[in-house]
Length: 329
Image (cartoon, rainbow, N blue to C red):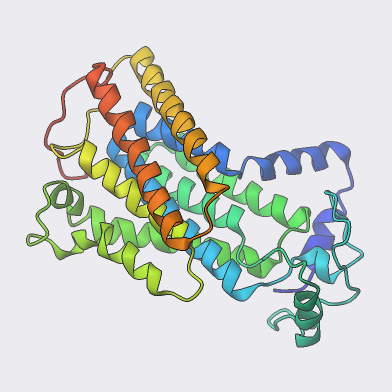
């Protein structure tokens, strides 16, 4: 699965419209695109379900980035100079016939050594676009239980896969790895959290009633024990959980309301995020210590969730006051 045959097959479609379409689909896999979808889902559609989707994405994103850093694998355009590339890659090494010799074999050791020694590898395995699209669309589709969302989920995940292969950004193995990393957190969150009503006990801080609620606090901290872990991503997970817990101590907000109330809630959350991110973004450029970066992300994302939620409640943008959360159907 580390061969480039699939990439070559898809690149036989040499059409500028198709190329533009593939680049557009790939661009939609960016952080900002999913950020808009998440805020819309949480603040405009249903807070609790949106929060669950966010959990799936946060865990998927952590393990995607962690594996990329640990494995340090090349991309198809690194090992096959005959593949077309669609971005400026000046100075990036491109080998000839550096791919795997068979479908189930890995990349040759001499290929990996040569590329890693060059210092220009951009961490191909697993596919981040695929894991993000899978965790978001699958969890959203299952939770919302709407035919249109489920169809959109399948279509967008498939288009994301095709675009990353066409653009020679990933091997088939990267795609398969991304699918697994996107799906596994969904199963863990769904079967370990939702079906046991952990969310309700977590908000009430009743750890003694359901130990699985420790998922929100202890499990993220254990990630810090992994080698070469991204402490900033762990800080993001804990910050999101802390902000939501502080804002929703009496239960998740009701997401009912008119179209205009839903839209205003969405824009309030985006504005709060943008202002906080602007402030902390300037600090990030000056921070290098892991402990400080961890604390920065805890505070930043905790404030985003807490202030966005409490401001919407204060402005009476949520239809009802906070009420006790009911078990997920």
